[in-house]
Length: 630
Image (cartoon, rainbow, N blue to C red):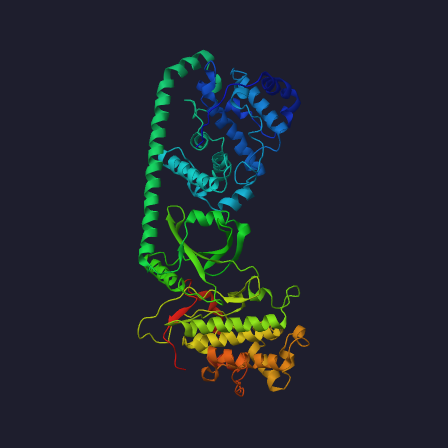
């Protein structure tokens, strides 16, 4: 698996002396690698017995790689700490070669740059340690699955070689100066992945590309062969070895080229099928997987923004400097053609939605390969101020009354567009603080409405796929699967009360002593409002800040929207007009007994709702249905 490079032969006398003489006594003891294996390992010394030794350099690079692989396994660092240690190791390396009666100028001839084994963050994507490798490549790469165990057979060795080349290409694409990435892949495969270790002849021969002697399977036999016999054997079979190596190389290269061609063909066919399935007027841009990998620094852990039940979101920077959020869909259950069809339909619908209070889809990406399978990505604009939940209850990020008022109105306008601005309507089904994102000016945009399903003609309002989050779900939807636009209105009412009070939807402060003492925010707000103490609902930071009459109106709208009875809830358009003061708020109707009481929970089976969020379908966080007349 080692790559070859041309070597120059203009080594200076000063360098030769510094490597072969001066550093032997001064620095050999400081080398952290035990290089004694050089004299006992059954490697083929024939190429190094030639008069000038020029063809021996690749063999020596592989041989030295055994020690570096062991060093990586022991210290988790890919190279040596400084030039002094590197010089000491090269001197020790030469000493062991000399004990085999090999030319004393081989090391300075082949390794003219004494710093080529010194740690340098510019050599391969900034990788210095195994942790850096995992950050760039991922916890499980193609090498981790293809380079284990006995690699003596051509098929298994070729698979490992292909994996190394794929990872090398991935790393090389992260920067212009990543010249050592393939050698790093070799060291990682031999020292970390392969359980037999780099000193096993099968590992060294395949991964490190080290030629073996004919006695590789006979322990200690190489030390008993006389130099004369060895020379006779070397020159007798040298032609055969070279021929075999050339044949194997041609086969491996052809196989790798053929597999790469088939993989590229499958990828192109897969992408083309998606593009053909979309209407020409879809607003989604198609991104290449390499473009997203570069934007996210190889989907590095440091760029991960969050992970949910059906996706991982990464922060990325496009080539033009635009910040984006890249969501990788984690959909292990729908990798068939039906799942592909659903995804393309959903992208087509949401790609055309444009509203200032809805997070628009910038583009998407699909890819398929032999190692990682099918992958799907959605690309959105990056929202610099995070989500609403980050700001509620935080002492460092307190929201002012104008900001809270603006956010509530922004969310209402975004939902009004989904319900009334497009045909057929889109019902979000999961309105909550984490799905409300804030831009640089603290303007709110509703997110995660995008993965929509377009309803068929005559579709009813009943669904067996309940999606949402415990506490925010409308009772009729959670219990019976009855979905209407007022299901979103209920969730919106909960969010309004959370913003106005700074409290969470469920108060479990007393749940440790009483399992049935969970208090829903609507019950708590209604209790204070009915008692004439609506000011107690306001966040403490607002009580002296905003106009009480306006804030009371917002609380009353939240209570009305989150009423357990569908008929008492307004539409989102009516709620928006109430918030803006264009129409009066009707008298708040009485509410049933609080959700937290045992009688309510047992009669309506609410304890089972806790399972809803875990069973949420990965692709359907919203649905398009005919509008309800309720």
